Length: 222
Image (cartoon, rainbow, N blue to C red):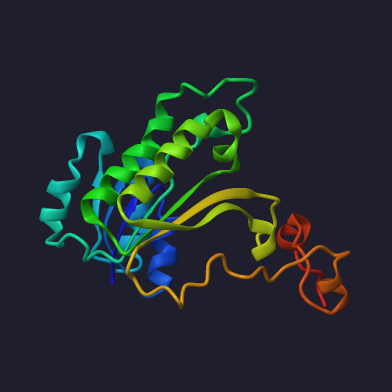
């Protein structure tokens, strides 16, 4: 049940994979501080044997990594990754960010998908990825996936507040599954378990969105 984590950051995706019972074979992260945090939290604390590569993903050949890991084409379970999002960010006004060179790293992500041919891949990014001005990158990515035998099962935004995070935080997710892979047990996205206080779900007694004050204010002494 092997996984590789591209643009791994401090290890959020890898932690989720670990909690799901998956083995993260390798992780790639350019930033030295983030890589150090990843090592302490994922490798040292959780005693994972992940091959952490602190380097530029543009200089890492997918074929060489696959051979180093001893993984056959099509054998990998999953590729995860959140390519740099600054160019797609909503903070970039007008056409700012359209030509940001970091946007091309979304397509670099796919180079690893093409080499490993995993059973599935999951991309995370800012919601701005779906803006019309960035359509060329998204359309190219989706076309590459479809041309190479992947079905896009999900390509939309999710909001962290619907899953218990005390923050209104929309993120883009793209899930692709290789044709021929049994996918009747795939449940993505997961059903939300937190709802607006004025929703019908709240009236039925289900959990409502958590606020920052509810999380960070000290408990009142009994």
